[in-house]
Length: 103
Image (cartoon, rainbow, N blue to C red):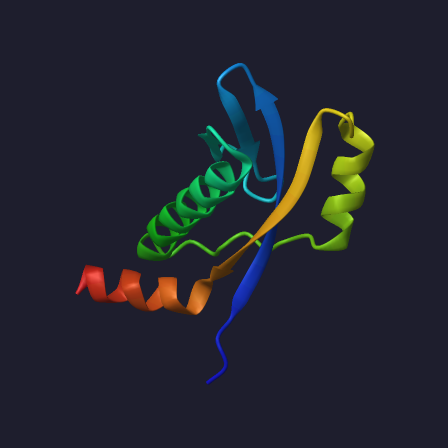
């Protein structure tokens, strides 16, 4: 079976101590880091952890809005202040991990 990998947009902003990121498709989730790379990695971990909890609770995972998410966030933010990136989440692997953990 082919793996299901979802791509989520994240917006990364500068902070006094480094960077912070949020994901428009997953309200309430954020991550920070000293570098952009660390911030992206931390955001991916935060999303995976959140999604594992959702799977364990039987909740549907948020769907990425794809290109429309980029268009919407581009209208909302000052492009000089933010970087846009995306993370890939292997939701099939998370499903297996969550099911194994709950058995």
